Image (tube, rainbow, N blue to C red; front, side):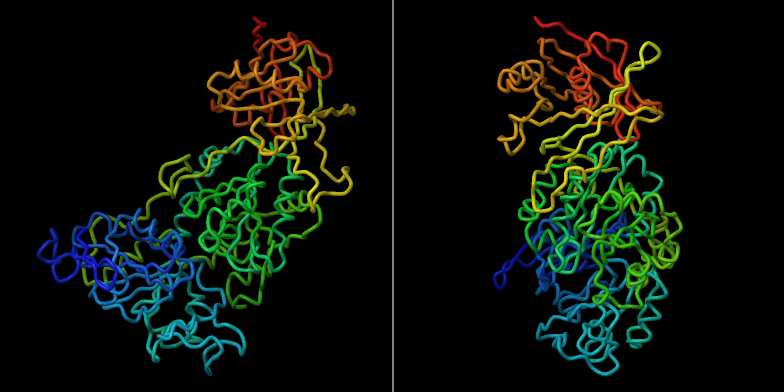
Length: 624
């Protein structure tokens, strides 16, 4: 794309600018400008960008207002979108047929063309002071009569004159709302803007609804095993959010998730608002969460597949952000870890969520709270909130395209409008589908085992329950008995002796813990048999060394030098076992610890983790 430098910035020469008609191949195309405020608003614009696909009559452009405190990540996002990017000063001088924004931030009144403004969340709910830019927005301490704002309190973002009007006139040509309840509030507090309102549903919610039939695919892609529960921790931005430091429950929550939840019974993911990532820096956020990641938390990147993760979730621990509301709206159990009602319009749907959903009780045992949430939840609990999420579930694509093309003055393309389906999370690939792979646990594991030897009628059955050993931090229980114990195997009527051992990955960041290992672990070694031999030599205190060699296979070096290969049989659906194969090694250790000969396992071994049963094939290779 042609560029010229003016005022220290590169201005585009093609396809816009004075020379645009001379150098453009399709010089007569209508111009649609996507106005980006920050990464958060940009993701909503990316939702609707495909509505202009396959129409050579339209040239899409992008710009950034530069007005947000959260500008980190915007250049990379725009570069990935592949649209011509105009500096804001050029965009403000360039006539366009339609501009689309998902935020009211910046000097939007300078745009030379019609303007449609969408919400970048679940409607308009939060109170947010208008920044004093010296241009269109008032000083944050002055709320005029009839503004709808309470004295001393910020106005509701997107539904108040302070945000919607300039010199008494609406900034937007079309104020796109997702539900009539927003129109009711808008008419009450800002009648001039209400005349520009268009009801067009919620494209983000529609894309989320379209993922629900693929829930099982998403769970498999995220590595959620049979019998596992996926717990998602979600936070919006700000000091009173779940991630914020006003009440600062996050350190306790991360510690409790690791300490109390058996790692093979629960999969844990974190979905954080982009303003957290881009306000504090991705490196800093990951540093804050690093120990939690070592203990099994998967952190979804800011442009990652959060909607797929939400569709796959069994429960969400969240706050007053849109993602938590979306979770409730699709019927997922929600536990509110933070909820500053004072930051919300009390008439908004999100405020109603706060009056409806149960609250997390910090510093009390977490596992019983989750069990109560999961067992007591009814899918229709939040039916009222679901109804408030969209005026036209599944129909926003057609409504939005009709609105946009009507504003441009073009007839709509003949193919039906649609929003692309969200794909299953993948390890790598496009940012919107990429999710970090389930990395091996780097925290030492305390492993509890039950043995039930049912021969000759059936193979031995060993129940394995692993807990992350997060040390003796400030949130550790003072009494070890407060840590949950594993249930007895299904159908067991007599008490069984519980044995325990410690399993540690050789790459654990704290290498001082390795001398405590009874079982040393590794994964994906190019020569696993050689590694097990060397590991036994390096760590003479341990009894076994095990290397995961495939998603369903573990190779274990046992004390006499033999190699034992443990491979899970496919499940009833023909798919590979999704259990962490390091569990198989712990089951083998439990067998050895009780003095049982390995040869007795050649007919098979059954391993139980939580509610899941894994049938293993066992082969033994004698030492050289």
